[in-house]
Image 1 (cartoon, rainbow, N blue to C red):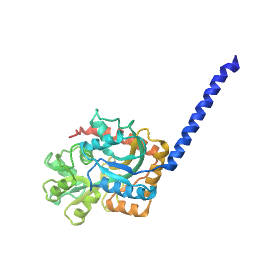
Image 2 (image 1 turned 135 degrees about the horizontal axis):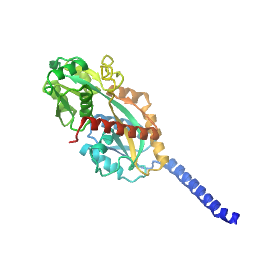
Image 3 (image 1 turned 180 degrees about the horizontal axis):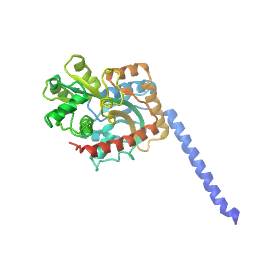
Image 4 (image 1 turned 30 degrees about the vertical axis):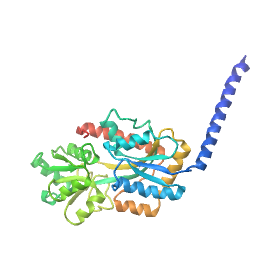
Length: 330
């Protein structure tokens, strides 16, 4: 009786082991033959911006290394939801990859009825870059650092205007977090993009804003804007003499946007590991590092597991900030 009871369990165990071996063999064959055609790279932002530039830089390196075109496909709109939904619903065959950013984490806080599950419908592949912001002010505001901005805002509550690239964007969230920590009031003026916001800031139509370091640098060098602080916990190479917000009396403030890669859930592990390997190799090449530094961003290659943990951590952090500040989407 004892042997007859064990026999079925032993047979089942052999079948499971055989199945696992077959699956591993299939993955190995797939990895060796992949890719056999072009790969679509969905970027849920317009062409020409920072996300698009980084995507095309990485795609070019991947194309050369993998022997197949990696074609960037810009699908902007609806706070990145349009392009991200396309990624989530693409076949999990390894021929669609997509960029996700901090907006991916923010959207699940703002929109409870997304057409996809921000965690379950994606395979995280790798983080690409961190993107620090810089707090800049028009010279007419007559402030040179964060403490002077705080003093000015307290002296005239609500009368200082700050620009952002839209409601619910990192540019607004970062400023609202600063306001919340410092206990000050400023009036939000949303714009539809960095270019019009910076144009009005340089013209003195608005007073202050958080923006990307690369977009602000020419105006700071020309003396048309004052750099008050960078949003990251540490100083940035492009603004070596500009302190961080944390250094400026608000030690809990640490905010950077980020870009990463994901694939549809169910994509075979052999393929996700191959893409991760190619991305890591691309980001570590000297010419890529040099180009990223010129753009004011920092390469941040990671493993799929590390990126998955980072996304979850960022989602929790951004949810806390949104709740504390009361920021609303467009």
